[in-house]
Image 1 (cartoon, rainbow, N blue to C red):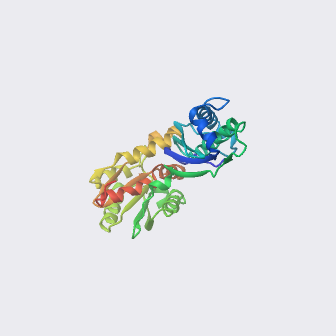
Image 2 (cartoon, rainbow, N blue to C red):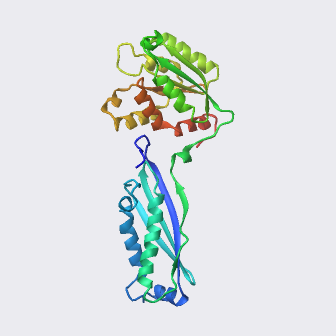
Amino acid sequence: MRNITHKFATLRTATAQTSIKAGAATIARIRDKTVPKGDALEIARTAALAGVKRCDELVPFCHSVPLDAAEITFELKEKEVVITATTQAVYKTGVEIEALLAAQLAAINLYDLLKPIDDRLEIGPTKLLEKTGGHGDFRDQFTPKLKTAILVASDSTATGKRKDKSGALVRDRISKEDVEVVAYDVLPDDASQIEAWLKTKCDESVDLILTTGGSGLGPRDCTVEATRRVIDKEVPGISEAMRVHGRERTPYAMLSRAISGVRGRTLIVNLPGSSRGAEESLDAVLPGLLHAFKMMRGGGH
């Protein structure tokens, strides 16, 4: 199966539709509930609901999704039964396969119930009508691209004793979004230097500043203190989301003191100094993080 451990859960919804064509007399018997094997629609609905819970067993590469809701509806037309299936889950991957399976299962069971009285049954076509909740639903576009600056705070990296990994990873990851990286600098763990750098980049009208390092409990860690002196208002939800996402992967994530906040028209986000921590933190907040700029520019939600 595809690895989805880096994703965060969102409300996922999918709606699929299929149909079964039958003679007018067959449709009438469905409506009157006189099909030999019983109430055809309720039997088909029950079978579909039971089967959709086993989707991962029937589709080998499908993840085991904890469905929160599944609904099957039928519309009786003159010579056709239209079947619509809707599935929902708060999860890291979509539920469209579940919706398609539910619709198909309902149709197949109807076929089985109706074949003794109609030899002209025909299923399909089956199609996905809608799916929502994927990461693409939270992606904003900006023209021109958002200006982004990256700061690596590390004594050892600043003195050349250690090669930077986290900053390079942050640069490569954020470049996949609708941004332009205009600065990528390294400073020692010195609060006054970090504070001055942050103020300078804000004055240069940088939209987004990402710092990595100096957010832990080390004796020289001071990025958080420098950031707090610079920002006008804090945005705690960003850092909370990163810690929650990280805590699901390692208990050490709870030790991060990282903060996020706004100075003027610039959003500043502290990331962990470890490359893995920085990557997971970005996974936790992108692409939704960039929606902040539409809000900051008066666009609301």
